[in-house]
Length: 105
Image 1 (tube, one colour):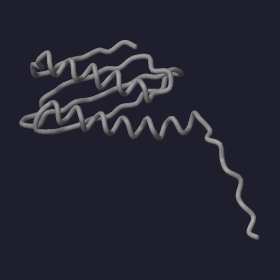
Image 2 (cartoon, helix red, strand yellow; image 1 turned 90 degrees about the vertical axis):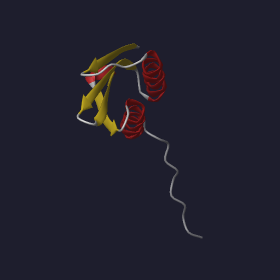
Image 3 (cartoon, one colour; image 1 turned 60 degrees about the vertical axis):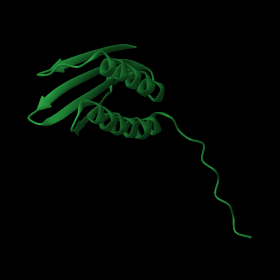
């Protein structure tokens, strides 16, 4: 899977870049056939913003945005939001075995 990291209006250090790659790899394990991830770091005044975009097969794109006092916090919040989307989205693609209703005795 290809990962693109972009910093707009800010600089990010190597440790944060490595953490972003780890987050990307972790999210890919929850996605159904992931193709690419884009991670955008930005500053909006005092607020730090991170946007995660994960594209999966068949053109579906999951997008999450996290804000915080620093980029690491914003990255964690965006990861959490995207993870919830993937959990919900995977339910659409995989049918879970339903247990038949039990008859009262």
